Image 1 (cartoon, rainbow, N blue to C red):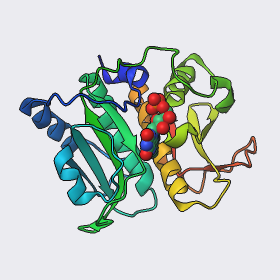
Image 2: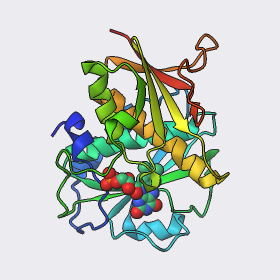
Image 3: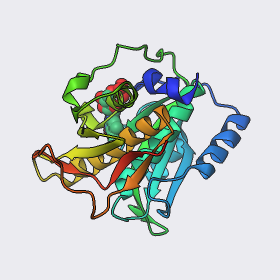
Length: 251
Ligand SMILES: Cc1cc2nc3c(=O)[nH]c(=O)nc-3n(C[C@H](O)[C@H](O)[C@H](O)COP(=O)(O)O)c2cc1C
């Protein structure tokens, strides 16, 4: 399975087997993580991989899945930090899926030390082998494609919107919306209905996850920062905010 195939195959797994993953797997995983580039090129982040038995040393929450391994994400609190963490986390999840390893995003866990070495704890992922099969196309619970965008869709952008649609999100709220223009996709995040800081954080992470799916589906697109030249939406999408990065065609 490739990482592109993993966009469809990934699903949240809540029942893991305790079969251990081998040492070469962890060596390759560390190498993959070391080579990851966040959306914001200079944003610092750290990913810690720990076994189930060590989780209680760092995490305060007691309700955790029975996964043999966990990954903890810490990030520098720059403006796009949550989005960066989501981007990196989904890249890793797609890699795990392509290796036949199941996972679950966990936004609900609280760290005992919220800040370590200047980096804020943001997210956890449970992972390991599972008997739960990977997902087959069409079995996902998601909004229909036509509810995700405004503007003219082409064959190329349809493939990207399909990848975006399949992204996992906190409580499956799918807070993204897209404006399609010639050679450009502008990415919007739904405004929170209630001022809930944790949900806001999760939805920023969701946008990063969604961008990781888009850029994995077609790497000839790159995420760029918005500049003052990028005028507000010409379609007017009041319930959404334009997020800083947008995706722009380079080819
Ligand atoms: C940022 C984020 C946080 C999440 N937190 C939790 C969590 O704390 N507990 C949980 O059971 N699922 C959690 N999920 C999983 C979502 O509920 C799941 O991705 C969504 O329902 C879509 O289902 P799927 O992943 O099987 O496609 C989280 C997902 C994301 C992206």
